[in-house]
Length: 323
Image 1 (cartoon, rainbow, N blue to C red):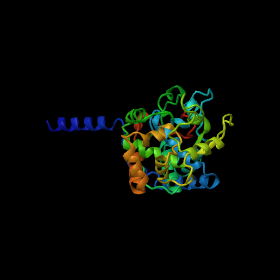
Image 2 (cartoon, rainbow, N blue to C red):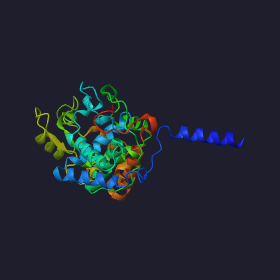
Image 3 (spheres, rainbow, N blue to C red):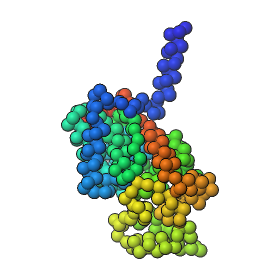
């Protein structure tokens, strides 16, 4: 009877572990003990060449985890142009994010060949860029394997749109076991983000039949945006999402929301909706509350759809499945 009970317990533990895999902060302690230091060095070197490393790497992690889980499927290159990165929603991902992970992987491979997944390197790099921009440090759980699927067709409908309201944001994040609090905290990454004009032009030029400009935008901010993004602007032009401290990871994003300076409708909705407004106000007033919630949310995000064991592989090259 005892053996039967033990078997049942093992089965339950295995079932509980399915979605999140068995991640551990010390996963590589015996096989690649310096992995985090190696990644940090590679990320720092890339950052010294361009600030874009910060938002690009953070956004890459988010886009990876929301499609197929945190499995580096976003990094795959397909000769046919049909991989995840080729989807319309991913074409604006800056090349510097990909380059950061690829360079870090090369450094890790030189020290510990065939041991560390690209998915784990991306997770560590996402933490490292937050710290480099002045944000909070936190421990990263490791042990992900790299995914075996990367399809552009899987992306549509799985990433938040700039036009989303609170309910749409909540339902999308809830699919990944992320709460409203997690969603609001992760939105704070927009403090170092940038956006192409097309993602918010409707708020400036065609908001509604009664008002060309979204009335929830601060009028001076709206004018600032119009001068940066005139109507027929070059589609490659991008502007900072945080007009106040665009190169610092801080809680000013939330202070901007309170002041009517949220760039996307989905940013502005966090303050205008009474269900989320108290959290935005709290984060605007308390950097500590924001940092704590952001750390919790990033660790939860890193567990989304994780592959372990034979569900994945350790890619030799982050851009290609092992042959």
